[in-house]
Length: 371
Ligand SMILES: Cc1cc2nc3c(=O)[nH]c(=O)nc-3n(C[C@H](O)[C@H](O)[C@H](O)COP(=O)(O)OP(=O)(O)OC[C@H]3O[C@@H](n4cnc5c(N)ncnc54)[C@H](O)[C@@H]3O)c2cc1C
Image 1 (tube, protein in one colour):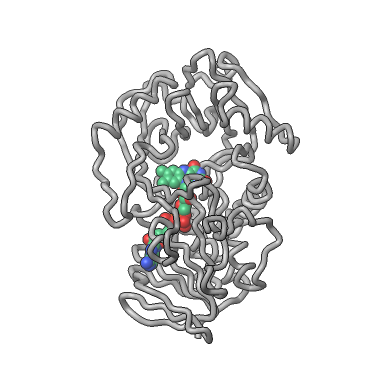
Image 2 (cartoon, protein in one colour):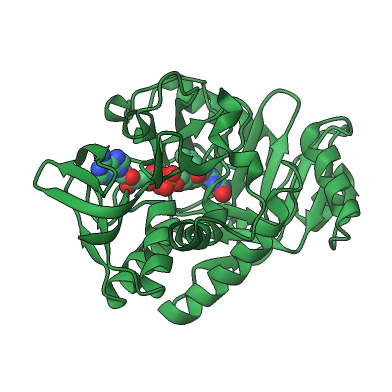
């Protein structure tokens, strides 16, 4: 019998498997697609990581631990995964993004610079901002390479004797009291513990009636510039920007040519993960292209990518024991901001499997809040 099966080798499952394998557990990871794929929520070359938090205090210890663990992972994997560019959160004075970032920075004594639109544009000439926008810049921020992160977690887990079966889809699972039985399209397995980290597929895998999770289609685009230095990662930061009309986020040039732009929740289209439309529509292009007014010298978008957010109504994560199975850990850490924490969440998953508890306060992520 296996000690732990982890369903889903995406952001959180791969990190969980890595930390479990480090602790010497006999673990199996099951992934319905290839080692790296573009059907879920982690692909697209870059994910923001930041200490500047506007979501609440629970996330700060997780952010601090995540930074440490990403740096440890880079050392162990011997490749760069984390790029420190700094981050600027921009909005009107009364916007959540500006106000909450500033308050959090002050409250937690973080290193920050409060800037008006002119100061931002003079420090980062790639921005073209209206007068009513202000920003909080923090050096402690940047981006992760998500494909490389997943590769590092899975390959190092295999080095630690974990087994991963790709192209094997979990169809169902059942708690038999003495063990949990997992049925896939290829085999049936017995395990003492189960971790479900299926991303956008969690609704079906959790099997919890009336769980208010919604899967939303996301599109990101890359916008090249005639002046490449404007969006060079050595002098342009990652950013989150609420211009009063749309709430966007993005990255300096990395991987694909140009500035990368996304809008939180895009066109708010609810989808089933097996039927997410990967074709780019004129509405997709218009929304992203209109947002380029906040930047100087961008050309027509050349590359686009489609992905999914799995949202809770309060945008906080689910990280808990399954309500009807003590030995099953359920992980839904998305709402568009989960990747950065996956290194720390992997460690928490291994603690929950090992000791049934964690030193982090994860009460905010309890499933019982949806009762
Ligand atoms: C466009 C976009 C931009 C984002 N930007 C950021 C950002 O800047 N910063 C940030 O922190 N976060 C960001 N996020 C969120 C972050 O990427 C997600 O929180 C994270 O990827 C969720 O991880 P996950 O493990 O839950 O899901 P995934 O990473 O999607 O992994 C789930 C895995 O489970 C597998 N699976 C599902 N069902 C089964 C089954 N039945 N059998 C076997 N395998 C199965 C899937 O194939 C998949 O590989 C962004 C998300 C998107 C879509």
